[in-house]
Length: 101
Image 1 (spheres, rainbow, N blue to C red):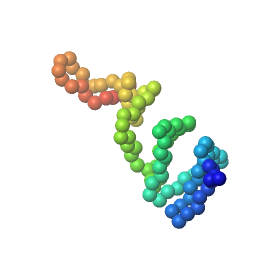
Image 2: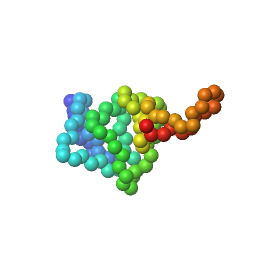
Image 3: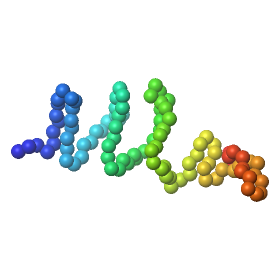
Image 4: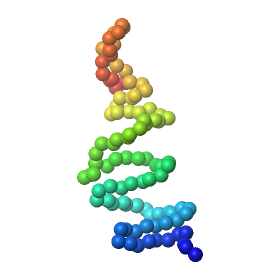
């Protein structure tokens, strides 16, 4: 019968197919792509600290939809939840820019 797990080599590339789980285990795993790397899944779970490098591919992060957190967001030393503002006055005026607390 047709195999349910296999590695397919073709002119278009290499496919690794498994109906269950594929594990890659090493001290360091490096993925290099010349134009784009994609992860496609209904849910993506990252277990560990996530960071963005400053190498030749460093850049800004963009999220199409909302970003949520169980903790605070912080830009530099300014907390989103606990920041203070300067130039605050009662009434309909607007406060100044956030300052670090």
